[in-house]
Length: 498
Ligand code: AHR
Image (tube, rainbow, N blue to C red; front, side, top):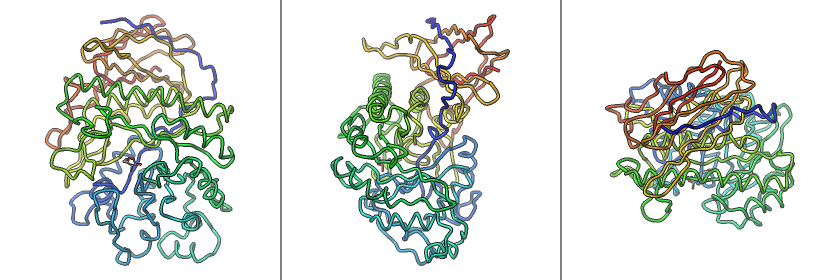
């Protein structure tokens, strides 16, 4: 095993927190995420509240999902909120032209989504339709949800079962406006944004809106630069960024398999995943030029592994399996976000159920938790905790002459003074011997939980749902004031020092 010297450093800014909103998720009307995912037929024999599937709700409650983004994605710019309120039988059937031309009965609309968020304990994050909607339509949606005045819209909200305002704060103004949201140039979009933001009204008694700019595709610096230059800082709470991890790195042709991949394919996936560090650094540096006080949040509101769909499934439904590799991507990406928490104050994994890098997969009554879910379970300790910097030099993970840093990590201190360190070893063969110094940390005991498995392409199935699961970790020891850890290959470990 290679030895790594790691130092837990005193915080340079004791007020810096890892925002819980880094631990946000995404529910689009896409494939089986909403319909036959969160929202099931009355006849399905699972615990339900109305048609909301409660075993999924319970799983998501347990990992403290901070916010849930809805209704898209690309679908948001085709969605008209009025189609999804009022008596279900009177709601129109529409076509989901973005995702498989599925017929949408609109039985899951605004009230159902907000009920789902309440059950999960997640803050709702709505995406307003900029691509095919109007400013008036968005403004009406906000009045419908947030006003306490007596108006036809708020009366309608009461008739639909919710007399009290909902007070929805997080609002995305469009989605991927450079692509499926309208194929706009950034100069055009920033004008459109300002028009929408002007009519996104703060209603008396309702919490202040967090207006969020539809941001860049990957490392598109010009998009971020133009948004920061053209939009006054007080008109935006946040700016987004979408960055996916494709095993092959190619949007055209095969993106790579979700299971049954070889080590070279695993290596290339991790190489692509690690690009998040450079992408976030680049956008954050541009934002710093226009906003040195870091008032505007950077939200990576779509991220995750995107592979080819499972053979035999609808290509428009984006259903893919989820292996230990996905968990290593999740652990690594969340470490990157934690370490950039001065600017990255929100993120949404795509997507929560049955789509892309899902937390939960379902098959009729059956449900399984993916390896990615377990990483969010481990990392929930970082939510709103004080950021603790780490210093180390990573050993290399070498494959066929190519190299990657084997180790990535982040740390935080919670309200009770416990320090949590999350460690990821990407090397498939070599364990790492960590010798950690913790000056300034007052601790007596160490405990941990680990996620690993025999192969990086191991995954959970409906017949064997616990092949990849969490286990207690015993190989961390106190040695005087120092900490000694033997970190196994291909593992995600979170330690608690108390
Ligand atoms: O998450 C799937 C799709 O990916 C989203 O709808 C879109 O915003 C992105 O291109």
